[in-house]
Image 1 (cartoon, rainbow, N blue to C red):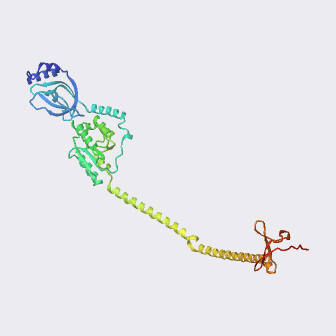
Image 2: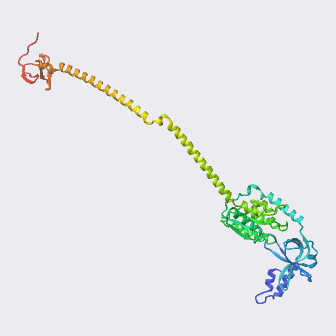
Image 3: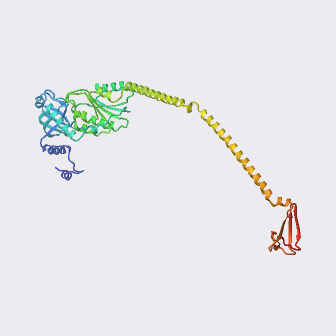
Length: 416
């Protein structure tokens, strides 16, 4: 019956009663065929005296479950007996319970998944993830030297939680943890661990995430080989540490995690440094730095002593005093040379002055000679050198030693 057909047959004025809807749903579901289903068994209810056993089949990678009913003989005939968390493959047909309106699977065959099959599936998944590069060493990130916050995913009040916290705080008492308790086995483990991983990965105060659990059987550790969990760890932006205490068979989480620790105790020792070791290392480095500084100072002091011992620095004023004496000597020599040169030049000047005086017209006029001048055509006075330069009536200026006399030419008389 399709939705359009049901809509045509019903209306607000003519609705179907609940029994009709339930019956039609049952008819549709009962027409479905049987299917093979795989999951983990939880909440087994097989009470004595009853003919029907009730199981809950849960998907290990998602928060999805379905109710399964089966004849009691199927459950009792399984060896070893079924227990919570067991992986099974069953052949069942969907069934609709009319009285409660619920859907369940009616199983006619139940096959437990053996350890060999589980290990073979894990091995096939390991090869697949390895081929995709999820195990590659180059994609693994180094843990921070001192994380400001550490996320811890583990079981509630478990020995693994105690071991991680106790050892980490023993090494670094100030280590800050954000603990998220989840199921670490069974069908609910993977969804809870993935949710906790997403929560811690989104927290900016968490620098490293530790997923810890103590030892256990292969079935108990199946959640840590789940494909969805491995891919979630590989996609996390925060470094993840795997601390599953099961050495013989490592779950796939150990290969995907950025760091694998053999036990939760080992994880507590490797996620934080040892405060005693770091204190000793700081003291050692300080001592080395102090020795290096003292050695450098000593070297520089010896170098300064060597420089001070050199003659030029041992008596720094001596060369200056010697040079000062040389400067004074050369200054005196220069002064004497200049004075000698001045004396020589002064004597030469005096001799030249005497010669000029003797040869000058003033000295000649002092002996009784005169200088006669006449005006030329332009009125400028010219020295009279010949009687031909004047005529009668020419005014004359007669210069003597103490002045000048003005005269007039009356006659000229040629010489012998």
